[in-house]
Length: 359
Ligand code: PLP
Image (cartoon, protein in one colour):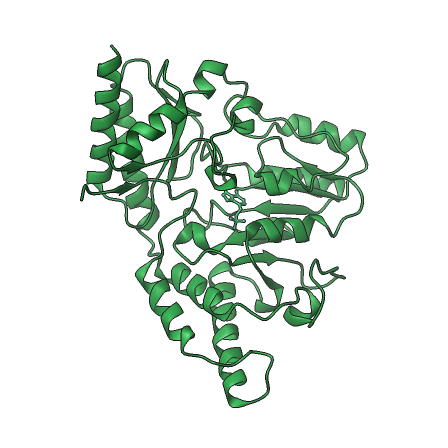
């Protein structure tokens, strides 16, 4: 069988061996964490141990973590706490756009960063309950100026939510900068189907899911012991040097792309997270390129591939004002814990082949 080169870590990152081991261990636990017998207490211990480790890595009190079924649920749960205007940017993940009711969207600049002047103007012209934005864009990798955004929301006395799904494990995150945060296990090599909402210590919380009152009445449903054990193990497994190694791969890839006639690296001059890059080859539709790469054993995606099975026009590239022919040709290449230089070399060779066949 032809070797595969998986370069779609921003959609989901393969399960790390450490996470798999933790899940296998947790599989041996029979009890329900809410049960009072020994089996139940064992499950509770495993779950709370994972919560404590995650909270320790994030630098917050364990009680601030609400365990959810995914980041989309975390986003929905946080945004649903606010009945008034929730201001979101035009480049958010669809799960945030869905909850950004009754307000104009914060514009993005051509370099992929939020327009701070526009945020300021919207806050001065509208009564706003919450500002919700992302730390790292999932299509371009552009790092958003969360400190500056915090200064602006503070000046207006408006709470801030940050979707940091693509930042976790890839760059330092200071949880003091926002009131609410969203994370997802499967983007860092944990299992799919478990997320975190980080919420303030105090204050009322309206659960999206009611019932058994788990998670201190903040999210009902029997706890996902396997999922949280895998999430904690995945985060623990990230060593301090991993972002640098991944960044080196991205740079190697981009350096090679610069040699391809007419190739455009999206938001090239902006500060970007180590693992994501988007490139357009002129005159080639993204879906065609993705299929050609797949046949050659290489997995990449276009736009927000995690949101659907088909290639859709990217609202992020639209918001940045990219020309249609560039936006339609853009593919996202994203690296992760098991990416190697040979994966980069394989995709580069294929891109050069595709381009020279067209010449
Ligand atoms: N937020 C961002 C920035 C993402 O990239 C994604 C997934 O791509 C999500 C939220 C949704 O994550 P989940 O699959 O855990 O719902």
